[in-house]
Amino acid sequence: MLAEPGAGERIERSPADVLRLVVAAVMVLLVVIVEWIFGDHLVSFASDLLRGLDAVPEWIIRVVVLATRVLALIVLGGGLVWAVVHRRWRMLVTVVIAGVVAALLMTVLDDLVGTDAGQTVVDLDHLGLLEREAVTTTHGIALVAAVLTAAAPWLSRRWRRAGWALIIGLVALGLVDAPVSFDPVKAAFVGWVVGAAVLVAMGAPSRRPTLATVVDGLNGVGLPVARLERAGVDARGSTPYFGEATDGGKLFVKTLGADERSADLLFRVYRTLQPRALGDERPFSSLRRSVEHEAFVSLGASSLGVRTPRLRAFAAAEPNGWVLAYEAVDGRSLDRVDPGHITDEVLDAAWRLVGELRRHRIAHRDLRLANIFLDTRGDVWLIDFGFSEMAASDLLLATDVAELIASSSVVVGVARAVARAAASVEPPVLRAARDRLRPWALSGATRAALEARPGQLAELRAGLERGGQPSAPVATT
Image (cartoon, rainbow, N blue to C red; front, top):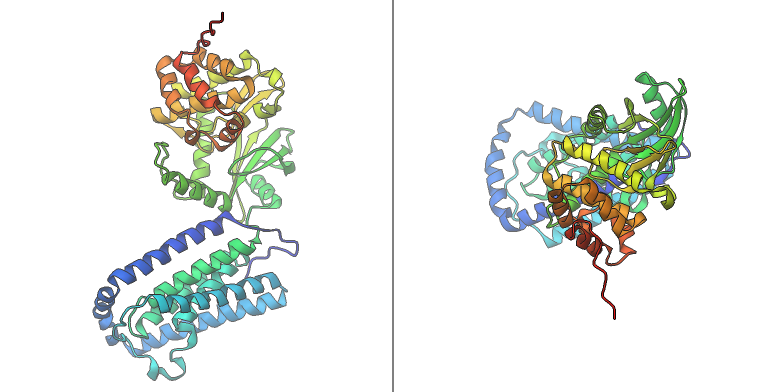
């Protein structure tokens, strides 16, 4: 019936819950605003629209009401029994808090915002034992929605769907079994907000793919894994692992799940609200499509001659996660290399790789030092195409150049960073990149590193203005 996180479940605050809280809060705000401004007119319209339901045969109404009551008994009663039997005390505390807060909040909102109720569409009082109960009042709907939202991390997908079917049924009954109003819909959204807020505040069992499911996924697509362990590296937007296949090949594995998807959507919302030209494309319709796109760009860049690790597998990992396995690079990223090893030759090699990307209009979009590797033979590699775009715009290509100039300047200084860029990139592109040397256009890691070096971005822009030439010496007397 329910998911089995295990006795030693790891509790964390999930970006997925934050995303649900944001969406639910927006929906509540919209409903309250619409009710406040247009409520009476819409209630009157809905009453006229639904009036025809009183002609529906009574047996159909009985079936719908009975099905909703039975579903409520199974979902709520069964969930309570399961939680007690399996000693899911944290789950019980979480859902009790969510239910109580939702009922109280619904009381406050009823006092603040209200509309004149319309006519009752269908009178269910004559149905005897099937008559209207507390669970179909607005407070009951809010309580049930909050409880089911707060319980979601402990529920399997099938039972989450059953829960939302119950909420839809309760809202429908609330609309037809009482004077028509916004209250049932508002109650469902209030419960959703409260349930998500309680999860954000208290945390819930981790819903990330486990090590075992990652291994199972890779084995299932023909890449048997002999060893896999969590990697302590900078892998923004994914969970990284180092491992070894049974054929002896070294692996770098990254997994993405619902949390990473939600964090990415929140980040995109934040960027959309910025009054800047960031060049973002619309997000993909699902996490699967996003991960497939990364695999596609990685394979495309490799086939076009860019030195990047070979993709060895794409697999699914429960719950609702996806896995990419690459050949591991025997070396270190430039943010972990001794600065003395980042020679002009290394910088020039990095710029040649970026030049190949630009020649084929591929924007990497995350050219931090953490995504540029120097292997033990002295070769430079590009990794992580998770944010990349093919057939990219001039804006994105210029931003790539600006990012590499800025990130490399943190290690090699302004003069060398600008000089190596000027030696590899055409002047028109450098001019476009100069305009992108702004904090809001750079990655978080590069921006944070530059905050410790006040004025360095201005120096970089001035260096590009001179075309990479050193500044004129100051005359002395």
